[in-house]
Image 1 (cartoon, rainbow, N blue to C red):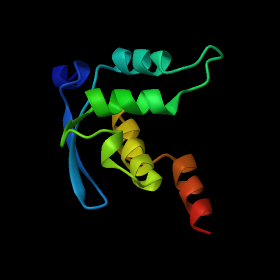
Image 2: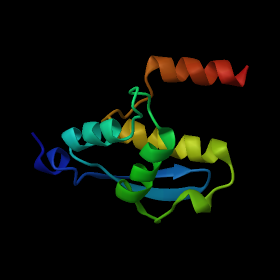
Image 3: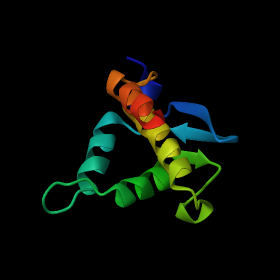
Image 4: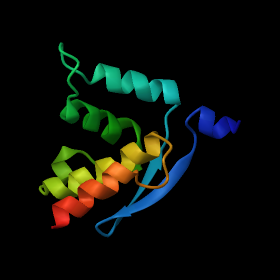
Length: 105
């Protein structure tokens, strides 16, 4: 087991629409707690709260928030990359690829 990965010290640089971001992972259990905190009383995910957590705890450089964006597609692209990183997935899953192909048609 890689200790840095286990304790969320792992970092990765990504580029979304020409901006380079540095993401820092959180421990896997903390990621699940983060998701649990960001649900309503009926266990429905609250994207705005989860994204707040990602802005605050995962995107370490440049420090950004909702105020830095006016394009929903850019925010969604950034968050999908961050979630993929948090889930320890380097490549998009088949359902993510299928969804992207359908949206391009």
